[in-house]
Image (cartoon, rainbow, N blue to C red; front, side):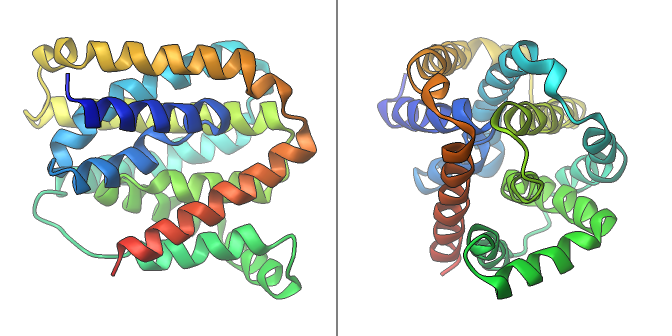
Length: 240
């Protein structure tokens, strides 16, 4: 067990336990910076992310926005699969644009100009969902756009988290299937990272009982905005 991987898993699992995303969104760039290649990074992170999301789904499945999820299945998932197949040969640096977009989303409740821009972009919903799939397939950072559009809908915290969790879990399932079909993930890989998944689940249980339950809906929306702002800044800095 590598200490740096363990620390990354603990940190990102804590974030995902609250917001439904985090393990892939933050874990991917952190593992890349630690010297792992993209495929190895997502092989480590996908089962952890999926494990946490499945628990969140079981707990709050009655709050899922099914109309939103159907759009994920139709417009996003095919492009996640398609672009993950070509990820080893297709490289494009788009993180700066995602970062700027997230900063706008984080500021929408405080700036009339930012709010107007976000409403305009999200109005093109089908295009947005397709772009989310392309970006997630290439970079594993589609969770940033997922949280942005969910935050823009103003859900209460349980509905926001479980809708994000179901969408994010579906990303992970199709990514793992794609890796398996393309020969990049074997059954033996799951045994190697089982301990990391157990750590992620343990962090979730701790966070659920001692942190998440104490957050009210108003504060959750504020924390969601802070998450988007932090993610946007991280992506902007990473692009340079």
